[in-house]
Length: 288
Length: 199
Image (cartoon, rainbow over all chains, first blue to last red; front, side, top):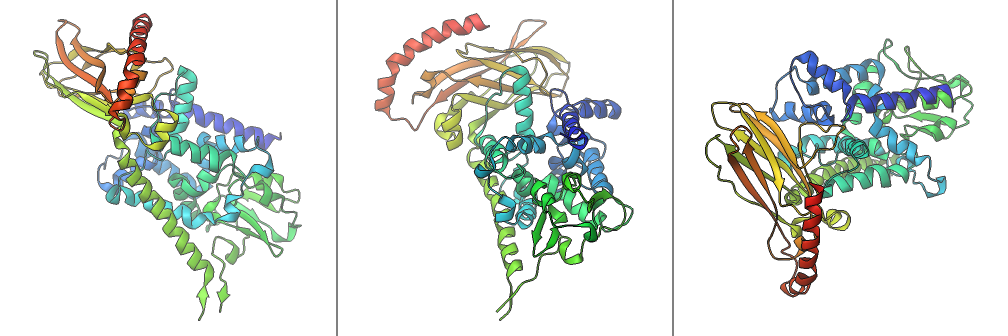
């Protein structure tokens, strides 16, 4: 285990203590700073709820934990990429690390089989539409909420009653898209609106030189494909000797850069180095 | 005729994503009765009239039926203080034959118990989550009481609210119910003793 990996794990542990009850030190600190006694669990932080509240007109209160967190998240995504996903989100990390325990032959490469980007953003649109058309799924299909249940259950010794939607979430998040998936981040790729929002913001931020992004130096690339194998999100692919990058599905975790022996990939400021057709643009294929 | 194949497949997948989110919203509504909600308005003087809560096992979705049918939740037991003064109250789960916990606010390191004590300011509402286990007899068709939630004024000892919680299984036939009554009744007595020891 290299230093980069140790830092990642420590970051996820920090995220666990910062955002999830019974600890939730981030929410507790922010609540004290705001002078109120807001709830200190993942729901008060959850970036999905303020998104819906703003959209449905339920809340225009700016100074609450949810809205402040959303603004911080969007700002961080613009300047640094999906920082929260890459370094702090314990609920994204758990299935990723669990999937490493599963032999490769039992795992499905979801991202290679089904392009995650349209589903990811389709789900994001559906998520925002759901309160108007069907019923909000903010807490029904929530891996954050289930992660908190696991932590609280571990501390208190009882996970408590689970609804059918929570059970389905666990099956998708930890099972089908978790341990059974290459990279273990199928849920992040397809069904996380927070990740989708961050990647969308990052795709805009990455166009500017002063922001942090995944940079590529094609002349250094020796086509070893180690980065493609390492990417848990399936954001990198290799076809006809060309390395392609899908910014809309990247969490900038930097594992690809860590495994690149030739330093062709790096996380930093400056030009991205990706060809336009490889930088998140869908491939055009003409068929008679 | 030229078709941009990747755009077409992307559009299809986009629709799949939207449909999945909306479909899950409808599914969530379909299984909403797995969890109950109730409101009690207390005035500090007389006992509040409250509707009882009835869980029907038949309302559980398939995943819950398969994996965890015996644990149920009152997601939102709201106690509204309609008096002009703050009320120090005790909420207690009584006569439950299996484990029950009352949770208020964010989860803490310490596991909550079957009793909660706190103060509700005038005009404010206290939200209590009630997590409970069902015994075997609660899976019969007949409506059976699981227990009672009582709200007591700590200072005067007066009962301010009283909500009975029931379980039934409308999907079970009467024949099956008849057959299962005898053993489950025996089990009920056994469980009752156990529950008093727990408290």
